Image (cartoon, rainbow, N blue to C red; front, side, top):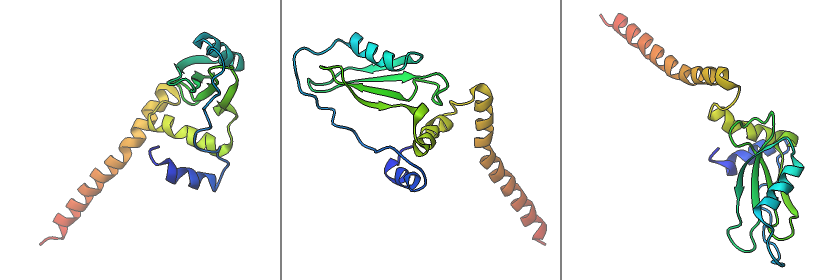
Length: 156
């Protein structure tokens, strides 16, 4: 999660991972920028069943709109992982990140955060993953208890 420079090359040696890094988001400033509503309409047309969860407005004149959507049946239950980057002047789609059609390596990487944050499989998944996370602590405590009992038995 916090070491993509180490993890991504390992995953990409086993499965296909999309090219990391940012694309050239610089756009030629031509005319008047499109309004945010138009950018949302473009993104919604690509994914009509998706819920728009976030829009990042351009931070400078040549920056694009970045829209986050959540498609039905996406692993990430919060904001979703579908991203659409749209040129702020022409409305041209600069980049798509569609987790529902991602290669295997990207799918694996997309599962890491939801598993880590227990945001998969509903409440049953949260209970299971919480228990699974406490198991190493229980092994440690029981192991220490066994060790202490054996230590007392061996002393004369």
